[in-house]
Every structure is written in C-alpha cells, then in structure tokens.
Length: 169
Image (cartoon, rainbow, N blue to C red):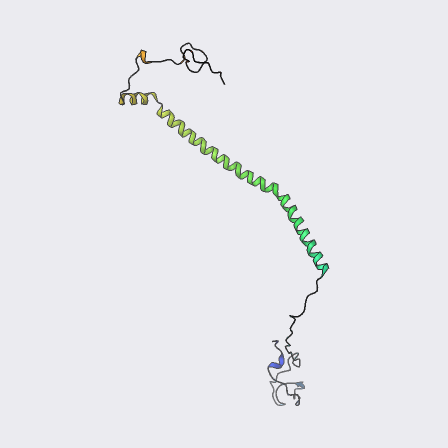
C-alpha cells in the first residue's frame, strides 16, 4: 500500500482548513506552530485487484528472431575465443609437462647415481674376497672348468656334435 500524506490526518471535506499566518495549516487560527500542508496531501491511492490469469501472451516473431541471432552470435564469439586461446592453453600445458619430465629426469639421475654407488660397493673385489672367505668358497679345479666356446668361433655357445647350427640374428 502506498504511503501518502493524508494518512496522518483525515481531511474534513465540509470544513476547510483555517489560515495561520496566511497559510493553510492543520491547527486553529491561534496556533503558532501549525504545520503547512504536505505535498500531494489531497491524492488518494486505492489498490485495485487485477486478475490477468486468463490473458494469453501473443507470440512475437521478431523477438524469437532476435533471440536466435543472439544465440548464434554468442556461440560464434565463444568458438572464436576458444580457438584463439587454445594454442596458449596447449603451450601452458606443454610447459607443465616439460617441467614434470625435467623433475622426473633429475630424480631418475639421482636414483641411477645411488644405484651405481651401491653396485660399486657390492662388486668391490675386497668385499667379494671377504664373502668368499666367510662362505668358504674355493676356486674350481682345472678339470671342473668347462669352456663354452673352445674353438673361439663367433658362436655364442658351444654346440655339440650333430646339433644343427642356428643363424645369427
């Protein structure tokens, strides 16, 4: 409900307001502090219930055409923006991949260095001699040694007589 000036004091249509110092006021002729009339005091606002539920909106073909144009324009702008930004995104992703591969390479090189150091420690001749002494290993006697390639041919292993030769790959 709208607020209006006549809410404060209901006007009396039969009795006009008395004058106070030449101005219409709310008080009597003798009041010094009477209020001047408020702006739009004479306007009355009524609320009328309107039922528009039976009304049907008429289709506007122009609005439908404009809507389709905006959809097409927005889709085209989006496609152009995506195509314009795609190389930048791929470049950033490739940079992240390269950096991850560099970190992985550094980690693998550090692991390789640690494994090389461990291998060198395990294959140290003094350590092997100590292990052989602890486990009581003995050198084989000469008849116990078998040579795989006695004729020093280019074959990888010795072939017994009658066995067919396999071609090299």
